[in-house]
Image 1 (cartoon, each protein chain N blue to C red):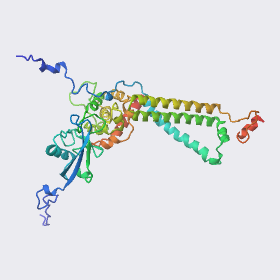
Image 2 (image 1 turned 90 degrees about the vertical axis):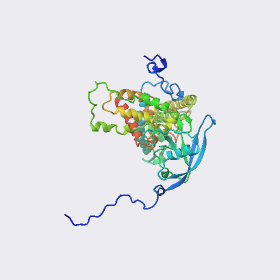
Image 3 (image 1 turned 45 degrees about the vertical axis):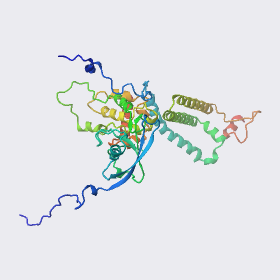
Length: 262
Length: 170
């Protein structure tokens, strides 16, 4: 066969350091974590606590919170379930922006200044970083977030063309973390506003070709606390950890209500 | 053997949803709105906004750029314009659209920023009264405007009355 010399591929595409024990290869740095605390059993008002921690380049804000809770102050309270950006439990205000603590790497933040962590705004704080999500889910329930189909159920699945599926693909990504709704300045002063998350989840069914209750959802969102309350400030689109174009979805629901009325 | 413990069959009695009844009233939509006022207001803002761009820029152009430009503006110039029904209609449309557009904008700002219902009520009442007064006064001025001012003796006021008045009274 061929006599040409075949160059040996390297064992790995990543050049591993010959020495070192792995963990040492990851850069480490000191960060100051500044958390807004609230505990009605300890004090009437909220207060700030600061901790300086040695963290690694692979660590997220959630890891810093874990380090505090597990090693320093066990009374620090926050929600987290999967810790990998899917469950939507740990939305919080990190350096003034709504983020998932489990998706925000410390090295991406400005570590020369304290990293501020607060509970999301607009919902009643229960303790530290935990808010009462019930008003949020109440709005979610009101837009009927489930498939309504009046035709008899087929024996197999309800088929849908890839184009029809694509129509609402963006809004299927919502994980109900409330980062959008609690970043909305309208929601901050008017808790009765349905909020971006409820509208996004209505959008997911309104534009689903298999669903028959779009008109009912549009009627619900034509309320004075519905889509017309949106001021298109794009805070929700900026906040969404799933990259959903929330403001665009709200505009599409507005257009749907308009064209239905005309 | 069947279970007789009544506590064990809660689902049939209906379990209360977690935290039910504990929502702060400020989050509850007590009176759902009927009709589509907010939608009409939303559409009006966009339509009137587009119309006002044309109305205002033509207004500015004819007043400030055409003819002698800014130096031509005096009582006689305004009187001359309002002697023409086209400009009467133009200014009337501009007045109504601008006032309603601005009032609706202020209404949404008050809705957004006022936190107490009583504050909101007072601010909106003041806004509606002020807007109504300006719209009514402005409309009256456009339709009852008297271009040929005279003194007590019935003579035209020189230097104030536009040119076409002289033909009428002399």
